[in-house]
Length: 201
Image (cartoon, rainbow, N blue to C red; front, side, top):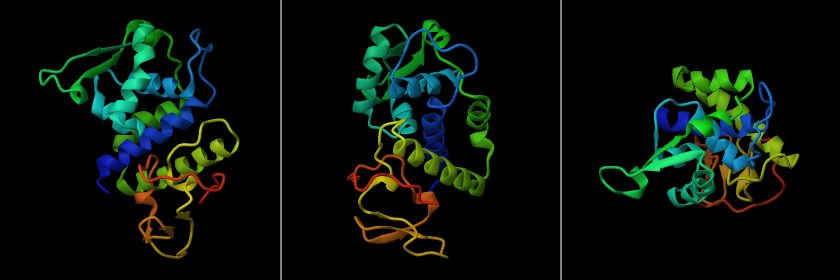
């Protein structure tokens, strides 16, 4: 897996966990569901604009699904979108408005620091952190704190530690192949919910 793709997955996972972490300072006046808070946290940690397709990638979602999530935020004046020179929907720019930034809680200090340092981590450090984040997401899903997402560890085809002691300890029965930590997905188009999520690590 390219290091850039791994970093994108790691950011998406960290934001999911950060959404459920205690915030620094007062709670936001504008109550937002977790999916919308994920978007606002991503937009809030980046000074420049996102391309719509890049935002979708960091959310582990599709362009169409991300557009649907953005619509109410745009209507509330929290997010703005501008057309790209290509006029392609996927290239539209997305940014938080001043009002949106003022209503976006800062993630807990640990999450804020990690989000800012992801790009500086080595590939092995990113892989190790991704394992921890994925396990944490699985636990939050078990507790009902966040909705079950299309991640490997909540899929009926996921067989954790089928091949212990190897670099590819897990097995995906959808493709009938072993895979390692770097191939763990937070959003898989072939995901089918199975047993309640359980930590795989």
